[in-house]
Image (cartoon, helix red, strand yellow):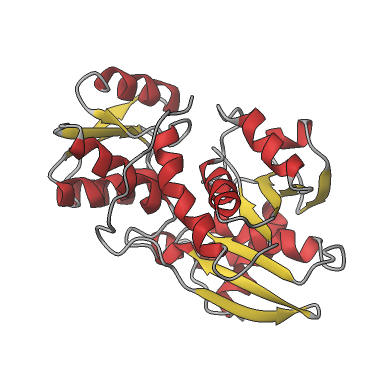
Length: 309
């Protein structure tokens, strides 16, 4: 699904986007860490949510709905009231109590569903009344995500971009933004071992960390609606897929934290992928996208990586 015609431009609402890039030297080259976890609600989703909700307001909607218990839910709750919209979040009953508490503190109306599938159905049912922020498939959400690619193009003309992939909104937004800016990227899609549908249709550059990937709890979508489009973008750019499991995620997370990057476990997959590809990346312009804040996991990170001796 796409939209036709020119879409409007919108301003930043809470300072979303324009996230910093930190440059470090590894394996004889310079690596850029794009700190998306420094967005206002702690994830890259703020770009797509901000754009979606500003469009919703311009169309006369009074409320917005999403099915999520993670980063998209937090983002919608943070931005909706700011824009004069009622935030409605449908979460599966398995959602963690701290996350649900934060959503309510942010002013969201939280509806509980029996499962993630049921949550999706409930959100669709609400879409007749409220704007549905469908981050899995919406072209509106992708329009907001495109700004990330445009920002990367300010530093690079032919970058290798290593990004986590679940629904695909991140990597597709990056792809569209870079192409619009005239850049020629190579895309490396990093997926959790237990949810790596791209591995069925694209070349696997590396698999590290085993076949279990429960730590990558933000990378769980096994059949993303835009799978074919994601595969085409990665293939067109000469990229590929890296599959990452828990052992590599745990190690990569500890290393990123030691560098001062306070990220969630699902963000750490890009560092695991970069290390797995060391020596195989011929170009020097490499960008790793760190997607979500580890502050949401602050009580759990020590248990994941193990307490220091």
